[in-house]
Every structure is written in C-alpha cells, then in structure tokens.
View 1 (cartoon, helix red, strand yellow):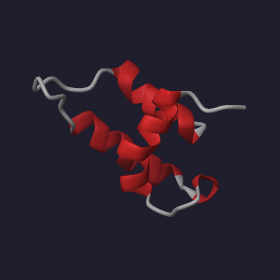
View 2 (view 1 turned 120 degrees about the vertical axis):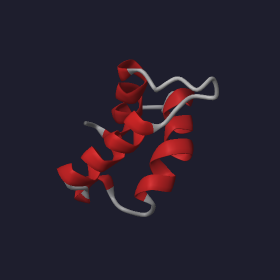
View 3 (view 1 turned 45 degrees about the vertical axis):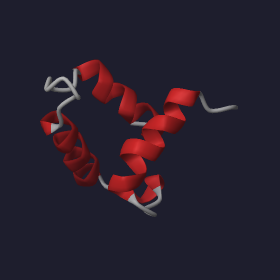
Length: 64
C-alpha cells in the first residue's frame, strides 16, 4: 500500500525527530504519551494550539 503524502510529512517532520531510530513496534505507551504531550504543548505558526484532529493525524502512521 502506498503511503499518502501527509503521512510521509508527519513522519519526517514530527515522528522521526522525536522517535529517532526507535522501531515503532518497540515503543512503549509511556513514550507515545510523551509524544502526545509534546504535541499538546506545541503551537502553530499562528500561535494556536494543535487541534485534537491534527494530533490524531500524527498518530495514524504510528498505528495507535
């Protein structure tokens, strides 16, 4: 199955810098919760917090 462009962008921009070379199958729930906490504190270019929908979009490539 071919990855959608947004999935690739999420991986390169958000997931890869946070998780590094860690295999997603080896991630613990606490690691994922830390990632989500980081996203909850992140702001957009306009200074707004990320919406729940955007955070959920980041989680799709993680399989969570």
